[in-house]
Length: 257
Image (cartoon, rainbow, N blue to C red; front, side, top):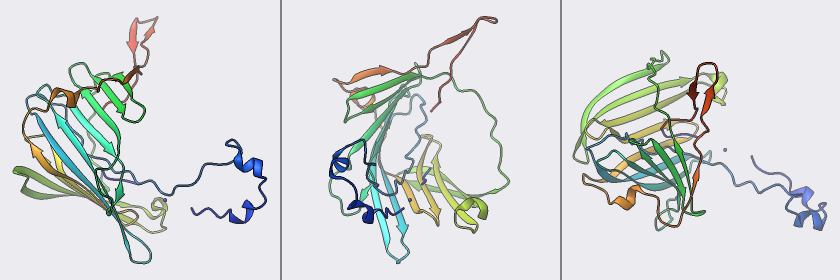
C-alpha cells in the first residue's frame, strides 16, 4: 500500500575544505537528494485462467506548511497470462508537469509453476532470479486497533469491486508528531481478477496516495511481456540448499511474493 523526509547546513564549512579534498570521491559525502517517497503498486495474484493487461496510475499529493500541494505521479504496466505468470513494474515518481512516460526502474516477473521470481533492471541489463519456496499458510489475525468498514460494491472499469475502509490510529509516541495520527486506507477489490482496482491512503504526514487501474484489457498478453528481454545477464540468487545431517532435511529461506 501506499507509504513513506534535513536540510544540509554545511555551506559555511565549504570554504575551508581543501581543493584536493573536494575533488576526491572518497573524502566527500554524496549529495543529499531529499525525501524519497515510495508507493506500492498493485499486487497481482498469480492465478491461472484469468489473463489481463492493465495500466496503473499512481499519484501522490502532499500538503506543504505554506499551503501549497506537491503532486507527483507515475504509471506502471501490469499483466498476467493464462498460466498465472505476472509482469509488474516500478517507475520513477515525477512532477505533474513532466511529459512522457516516467523512467522504468525495475520489472518483476513471477512464474507460479516454477516459483521463479525475476527482477530485471533496464539500465544495467541484469536480471536477478530466485526460486522461491512454497509459502507457508499463516492464519490472519485481526488487529483490535484497526477499524474496518464495509463500503459495499461499485463498478470500476466494468468490474464489480468490493470496498472496505481501514482506519488505524498511530499512537502519539510512535507517530513522530507528538500527537496521534489517523491513517485511512480504502480498498476496492475485484473478486473476478483478484486484484485491487483502486487503493487510496490518507496520512496527514505524507498526504494522499492513490493507486488506480486506469485501463484494462481482458486478453492474453504477448509472451515477450512475461519474459526477460534478450541481452540481459541472468544472475541466480537462489539461496543454497542446506542439508541437516541429523535429519537429512533441507531448508532454504527467502521471501515470498
